[in-house]
Amino acid sequence: MNNFVTSRIFGALVLLLGAQGPAFAEALEGQTSSADILAATEASDWLQLDQDNLLYIELERGRVVVALSTSLAQGHVTQIKALAREHFYDGLSFYRVIDGFVAQGGDAFGKRKIKQAQQKMQPEFEQPRSEQLSITFQDDADGYASKVGWIDSLPVGVDEKTNTVWHLHCAGAFAFGRDTEKDTASTEFYIPLHPQRYLDRNLSVFGRVVQGMEYLQALRRVSPPQSEDDDPGETILSMRIGSDIPEADRAALEILRTDTQTFQRYVASRRNRPEEFFYFRPDNINVCDLPMPVREISTEVGE
Image (tube, rainbow, N blue to C red; front, side, top):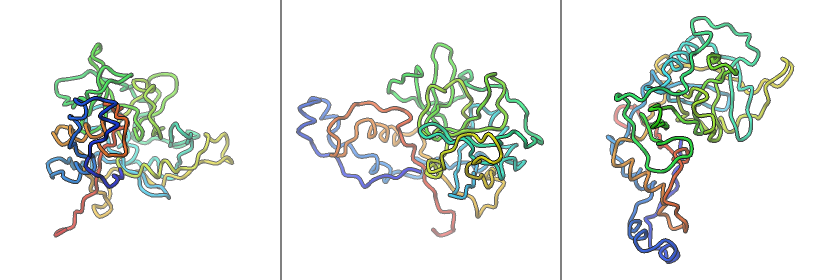
């Protein structure tokens, strides 16, 4: 999902030393770039994604893979699995693709019948933070949450006053749309093409794209069709759960674990980029601007 440029270890920069002080420069001296950190990872730094929680969206352009949440909004996870297993989305389309906003897909005219999935979903915009939820917190300040961090490598926000937690509307988030009433989500999903954090806690996010985001970004821009003669947008060939498709057709994906020292070093390298190209380093990173490394591994014996 992420392309990492060739890296170089940071050398001292005269302009940086003068602008940000010797203490800051000393802290950065010798710091390794994110690409070098990722190149030196060990097997224990990676979490293999469970095929039962991977959603495969096949487009004419290519395949999009979504990692479904294993901790939050589980009612919505159950719903999308049921819909995928009904083949509900096969032949439907991304009928609303707004530049700089979202790609929304599903049944534009509401004609397709649901077989086993729910007609209406109870909202799961946020939920109580329990002791069972293992969150890796990020130190950087956030304008939409008391704290931000990661659960199973998916970004979350926490409100310390209400003691609630939710998945964030970063680019690639997977969520259900709804009408004005809270319980009107059912089948229509959307994926932000850019972060849309003001939607946090107003809709239910329950996954994130881990492969194929470039195909979503390239979708033809369309407004919702008003009639069947209008452009319906690009077709969804199929939508399946990974464990339901032949093993040979699956993508064996690993995501960087957030509960490791390697991840902390990775975050630090993105917070203050050590590459010599950078002269200003803000000592801060937005949680949605942190690329979450994902890699595809070989399952062939002997490779």
